[in-house]
Structure formats: structure tokens, C-alpha cells
Amino acid sequence: MNLRGAVAIFNHELVRFFRTAFGSILSPVLTTSLYFIVFGAAIGSRMQEIGGVPYGAFIVPGLLMLTLLSESTSNASFGIYMPRFTGAIYELLSAPVGVAETLIGFVGAAVMKSLIIAGIILVTATLFVDYSIAHPVLAVGYIVLIAAAFSLFGFILGVWADGFERLSIVPMLILTPLTFLGGTFYSIDMLAEPWRTVAQFNPVFYLVNGLRWTFTGNADVPIGVAFGMTLGFVLLCVVLIALIFRTGWRLRD
Amino acid sequence: MDHPILDIRNLSKTYKAGTTALAGVDLQIRKGEIFALLGPNGAGKTTLIGAVCGLLRPTGGTIEAFGLDVARNWRQVRQRIGLVPQELSFDMFERVDHSVAYSRGMFGCPPNKDRIEQVLRSLSLWDKRTSKIRELSGGMKRRVMIAKALSHDPELLFLDEPTAGVDVELRRDMWRQIGALREAGTTIILTTHYIEEAQAMADRVGVINKGRLLLVDDKAAIMAKLGSTEARISLTQPLGEVPSVLESYQLALEDHGTTLVYRGGDGSGKGKREAAEVIKMLVEQGIGFDAIDTSESSLEDIFVDLVERGEVPA
Ligand SMILES: Nc1ncnc2c1ncn2[C@@H]1O[C@H](COP(=O)(O)OP(=O)(O)O)[C@@H](O)[C@H]1O
Ligand SMILES: [Mg+2]
Image 1 (cartoon, rainbow over the protein chains, first blue to last red):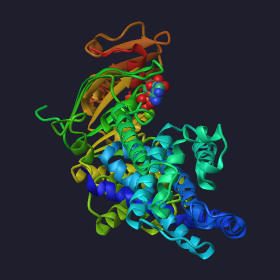
Image 2: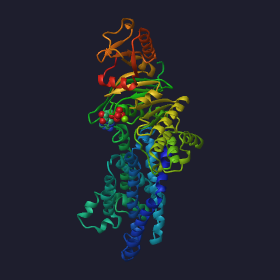
Image 3: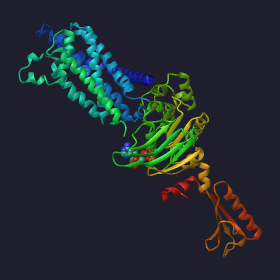
Image 4: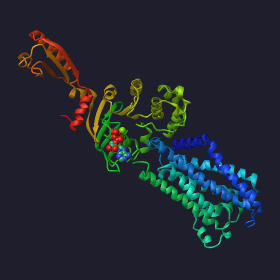
């Protein structure tokens, strides 16, 4: 393993992130803060508690999930798409860098970025809503797992994409809607049939509820199922990335 | 060749689109030499480099570098190879020194400020080290590409058309750089379609066209095998036939006997010597002439000739 190479890529990616820190940190934090102000502080004060949790606190995990999914996916996808776009990928392809180095470097850096943003969002949230974390260790673990899963997914997206539209289409047209519909702002109990059943086919519904459980101790789904699904998704992505390197798909003609 | 630093056997590459860019190439590179791969656009030069450096997957054949199979021992092999590709391609918003240091790290070398400084200075980039790459001129950008490739001290360096689109002054400068690298023991393989580049720098030359190597030889040997001198002597009086005392030379009469043409030599100076001898004898024989025009065939002529015939000359 070329550990130095992996660390070099990791650092390089983080530097790139901080170089554009204004946009890459401020914009997700600002967006999430707006949600907290509107739904948490303004509307939330007039909403009933859900399962004994005040509405403002109820939406914290969902909003965090919204940011985690879109930021992890777009950071990782841009990280690998940009060198493909500029041609600078030649250097990576000619370097002693394989699956392991790539995962540590690109995916690791994307995870780190997401964690930094998640931390800032959780701190910012305390300004607008009262919330506490029921299982802090599990919460951190689950956040890391989610960030890893979607950074891996983003990496695959960045290898697959052959234009900038595709990079933004997947987070915007698939992940964000699925997250909104996945119970960010409501409990599944508040839905009427058939939507209650439909919602259960949305994978993000399980992720949101898994994270909500670590925060509030309540969830609409068995927590084991949520964890298992996330872990399964991580493994699936790792296997796909290994296959990409083995076959050279979209990287080596 | 006992232990070639690079040993390519029967290498072929057919792209998915169906283009066969390499059709069974055999090539051995000696340690420490400068090898110039000459060929027209589309000949397969970039593909050949890509196959060695890991940018693409060959369809057939084997490649060994440093005695190691590049497909199996890719990590060890790639660490010791540097590549300067044809196109300028990097993160334009990055600083010159950061970009070069990143390359070094990517290839598994520990950070080394002194070495980075050395590389930047040797390419006259030191003053520009804090500039963003996009702020540099085209020639300077190409130097950054070279600096990146040299940052991990490769033993084998590929330069794909290093001087394409570079002005004459910078080209000479680059030749000096390449010469200095060879002095330091780096083996260099460069591709070019400028014959003068190969002629000026290379120890050996390979001519490639349509995915096939037509000829590989020492530059001097190629000149010897194919290089020739042509001397055209304008006579004051037309001759009916070549004088018998000059029979031993390769002479012909053209333009109704008014021009005596010598064609011969082997690139070693024999042609020029013989042309001088012919002239001396013309003087001795009292045969008048009023103009002499001599020319040497260059690698360019040889190259055009080879490519046109599409075969290895005897
Ligand atoms: N990525 C690619 N996909 C399909 N065909 C390619 C690709 N790269 C090069 N070729 C084709 O392969 C042949 C050799 O190209 P190349 O190796 O770039 O030649 P050179 O570097 O000598 O100009 C050309 O016909 C070119 O069009
Ligand atoms: Mg080329």
C-alpha cells in the first residue's frame, strides 16, 4: 500500500475544500439554518410534539441527513470528476495509487468534509432549537457511516458522470426528494395510506429514522434494519469501486 | 541488450471504437539512453506511452520495466516512472509549488522541500512558485508538467511531444534540460514529430507508423544506413557521358548533360569526401563548371521515405 500517496491525496482534497471554504462550508450551513429558523423556531413552536419530542428537535436529524447526503455525494463526486474533466487524472492513473489509496484519499477526505459540516450544523442548530442526543456515541458512529456510504456513492457518481449536469442531477433530483419524503419533517404515522406504505420503499426513510433514533431514542423503523441497510450500502459501494478499478471502467480505455 | 530497462513484447492495443493503435510492437530500451519515438499524428506514440504508464489497458503483449511485469507489479514500477503527457492538464487554480509537492506525495515519496526547490529551480520555476498555474504562460505551464513528473525522481521518464507548440528558444532550453537529466542518469523516452528534435537529442530513434515500429536503430547508424550526400555540379560544356576516370563514383548526367550529379555516402562523411574528390578530378581533367550545390539527406527525408514505403528498408 502506498500510504504516503493516500495521505497526499487526502490532504490535497482537504486543502481544495478549504480553498473554497466560503462556498463549501457556508452554503450548507446557511441553508440548514434557514430550515431551522422556519421549521424549527417559527412553525415548530405551533406544532405538536411527535412521540414526546418537540417538533424543533424532531427535525434536527432529518435536516442533518439532508446535508450529509448531498454534501458527501457532491464532494466526493467533484473530487474525482474534476481531474477527469481537466485531464489531470493522467497523474493518478500513472501513480502507484489503487483502490485502497483512492478510498483513503478521495473518499476519506469527502467523509472528513462532511463531518466538519455536520459538526458546524449541529452547533448552529443549538442557536434555534432545543435538542439533546440520546445515544451520542452511536450518533457519531452513524453519522460517520452515512458520510462514508454517500461519499463512496459520490465517488462512483463522479466516475460515471460524463458532464456537470449529471453530477448535480443525482443529488438534486434523487437524493433531496427522497430525503424530504423520507420523514425529515414528519413521522410516518402522520401519513395516510397508500403513502405510508409507499414511504417504506424509500431507502432514505430508513436512514433518517436510524439517525433520529440515535438522537431521540424513537424511530418509525427497527433500528437494526436501518443500521444493516446502511452497512449493506457501504459494502455494495466498496465492491463497485473495486470493480471499477479492476475493469478500468471510465478510467482506463 | 542484456538488461533493458524497458522490455516491450508484441504489444497491441485496439480501442473499443475499433481503432488498432498498436499492432504488435517490440521495443527494448537501454538504461540511460535517450530514445526518440518518431511518427506522424495517429501513429500510436501516445498509446504506446499510455500502455507502459498505466493509462490504458493493452489488448495483448507484455511490458516489463526494471525487470518487473508492469501489470503485476504496477505499484513498484509506477513509482519509478515519470510521465509528461502531451496535453497541459492540471488543476489550474493550484499553486505551482503545491502542485509539484502533491505529485511527489502521490508517488509515495516523503515530503522534501529541498528537493522540490531543486526541481523548481532547475526548470526556472522558482520565482513563480507561489503563482497559480493559470497565471503562467503556455511554456511555463509545460515546465510545471515536467516538474511534477520529476518530483519523485523517476528513473524512466516519458515525454510525450515535449516541445509541441513551444517557441524555438524554449525548445532549445528544454533540450538542455533533457540533456541534463540524461547526465544525471535518467532514461528518457520522448515522442516527437520534429525530426530535428530526434536528431539533436536522441541516442537511438524508432520510427512508428500505423501502430507498427518500422525501424529502430542508433541515430548514427540510421544516418549511416540511409544518410546520403547529393552534389549537383553545373558544367560549362555539356558532356555526352561520364568521363571514364570518374567511373568508380556514383555519378549521373542530368539536364541534357549540363549537370553532373553525385549521389552517395553513408552519413559518415564519405559522401562529402567523395564529392570533393570528384571536383578535384574535374579540375585536373580540365572540365569546367560554374556552380556546385550540395545537400545532405536528413532524418526527415529518411522518415518520409520510410513512411511512404511503409516498410523497413533493407
Ligand atoms: N481513447 C481513444 N479511443 C479511441 N481511439 C483512440 C484513442 N486514443 C487514440 N486513439 C486512436 O488511436 C490511434 C493512435 O493514436 P495516438 O496513440 O494518440 O497517436 P499519436 O500519439 O502517435 O499521435 C489514432 O488513430 C487515434 O485516433
Ligand atoms: Mg500523441
